[in-house]
Image 1 (cartoon, helix red, strand yellow):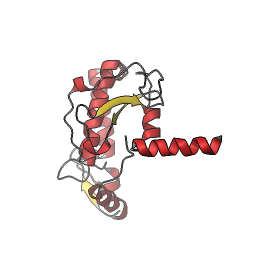
Image 2 (spheres, rainbow, N blue to C red):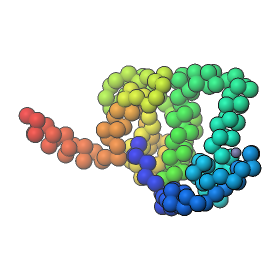
Image 3 (cartoon, rainbow, N blue to C red):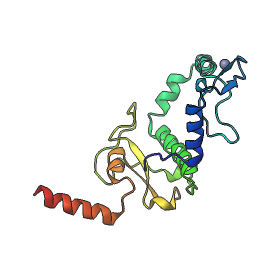
Length: 182
Ligand SMILES: [Zn+2]
């Protein structure tokens, strides 16, 4: 899982938002004309920031959560094996879109093993935040993207170490590291 590299489009949008401080937008909910910093950047097509200001957005989200009473239920679901699978699938789809990589995974293509195939550590589903033993989707050959056969689920720790390294690079690195430490 490579670190997020901003696309030129995102960079331009972010830079515009940071530098043009006198730019304003009208919130569709409260109707108030506010500085652009009061709105969240979005990748949605044809839009630079979300239509609701932060205040309205937060209030609306909180109301929705209260209305359905499903917040705890949703959090609990995403800490189960099935929930984790769904999260891994949808996060992979987001990354594919962001990096312009192929994506043709079905939910069933995400197989979470008991142990990390690279480090052998047990994979935990219920970490509150991404931890070294959390499952993550990794592309065996990064440029081929998220297609069946090219992905596997490995620990976040292994993914961090491997990043987008090739096998040759990993071997050279370990050989030199061993030589240096012995
Ligand atoms: Zn508002």
